Amino acid sequence: MGLQYIQTLPITTKQDLREAGIFGHLAVDRKEIAQYHESTGTTGEPSASWFTQEDLVTGGRQIKQCGVRLISEDLVLVRFPYALALPAFLMQQAALQTGAGVVPASGRTVVTPYPKVISMIKRLAVTVLAGLPREMELLAEVARLSGADLSKDFPTLRAICVAGELMSDKRKQHIEKLWGVPVFNMYGSTETANIATMCEHGNMHIVDEDFVVEVLNEEGTNAVPYGEKGFAVITTLSHQGSPLLRYYNEDIISVDSSICPCGRTGAKLTHYGRRWERICFEDIILDANDIQEAIYSLSPIPVAWQVIEQERGLHVLLDSHEVDKWSEEEVQSLLSSQLQVPITLEITSMLDRVSLMDNKPSTKPLYIRKRSTDA
Image (tube, rainbow, N blue to C red; front, side, top):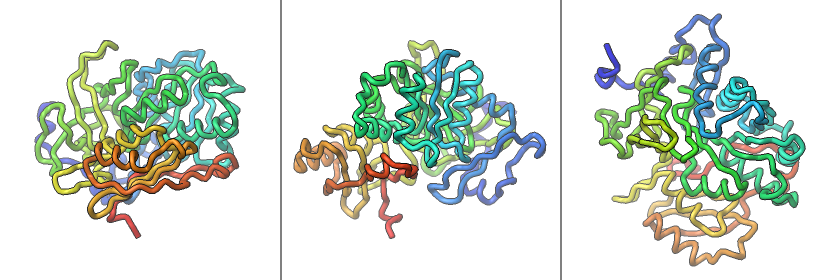
């Protein structure tokens, strides 16, 4: 049976994987296992994934296709957590395959607090930062609190690679403006490794030698028209440890054709957030990308924010050291206009800047709170 018949097969859901158990979709002998990874379990039980040594090499190759174009002269500071999460290890593999050096400055640990990382970027002449988008924002805030000038004090830094969180166009532009270097996004998951990488022209290209990416309607029964939003269904073509067939990962994406100046002709992917983040008000559907685009349209852009779903609209919390530049009425009007729902606003202190400058590790942020998750 060829790939053209793949749509005749049933989908695999997160619940299927949970019911199968940790070893249920292990496809190699235990002696072939190189690493075990699992997701953070944001939406329920963590998802397990197994990797052979060849899988890790493949994951590094996937990252190498990113527009950052790592070279042997690079020194990459990896800020992804080195604990069960996958991206740090794939980034390290990509560096290994290109001869680049690595500074394993794991996030969410007391060993490498934010001020130390800022110091290392400068002292070690780091050329590439890699981590969650939120880490790039928090590091920029620590640099500001430390009196550093991001545009002048890190002259060797040439690029930032991010993954693990949604990054809308305006969020990307914000991080680029903070650091003064291009930002390259990567899209994947613990269960699949890296599905798509951003080229130097800002397009997220699917690694089509390793994945078949379908976009289905909410019921998972039919494909949506090319270029339209739907739900991602991923088939791994090269993963050995725990391969997946038509995995419905609950991410909202679109896939479209792309003739890109970078030379790639395969499909490009756009990520809009996760299903559980979607908020609906009658005929208004807001995905996480819509909310991010609105938040990152503000001036100044908040250092921390959260959106809370209410019965008839959204309650928005904002934090900035430039709070005096905000007019509550103007901010409320702008957000309401962009999101097309009633907005209530609370300008407050959300970020513990004392802890940020101390030895306290960060935690996974929650940007969108649905009514169903409230206590």
